[in-house]
Image (cartoon, rainbow, N blue to C red; front, side, top):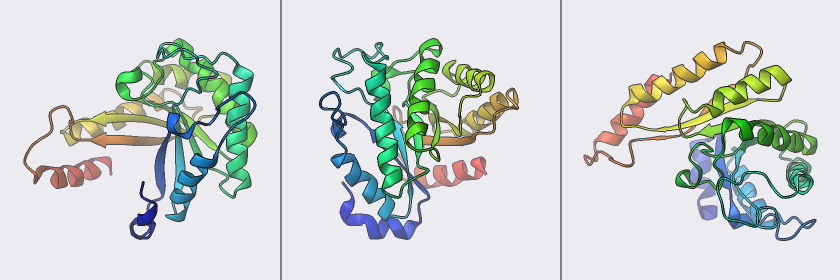
Length: 239
């Protein structure tokens, strides 16, 4: 949607641009026949800005998930799912985009309410992460895998993932979460909480990625002067 604005965005010097890999891209219209043309176009656009894509994997091919049910989180055919992810990562490695970030899920603690077709529990997110991350890394050994992009940093999914990754030696290059609050100190609090969780797992050394944050969008301040100050103060709190 912003192909015609690449020069302007490039001037901003973004290091990372996050992309939701969702149903629009129609990545598996039928088993054994992945389709990447639409995704190619978006990834090429991001790369022309000078940024590295972060792909948030939050889609359910209908051939693997025939029912629309956000509590149904496992594909009918794990082998087909893993081949699709391996092909995707291998494709972009072959196109000169090795080392992209792949985020396993988006707001898995909320499900459809969070804009994602999955609603995970700690018990079923870990095996899903294990198999999805492994498939990505088979396609691109230099890829960075992580998650769980929880809506709440206090979701039990995050400590479950950290515990499994440390115990099993699973790859975890970054952990991610979100917050929408009009209080910059609350946003800082999520960072402190994530770092505290990581201190309990000294064998892990992931990046921390707060990849969705903004004012409280359910009750946003109406004064247009608020948001510029909010952004500046939030960035200061992050630093």
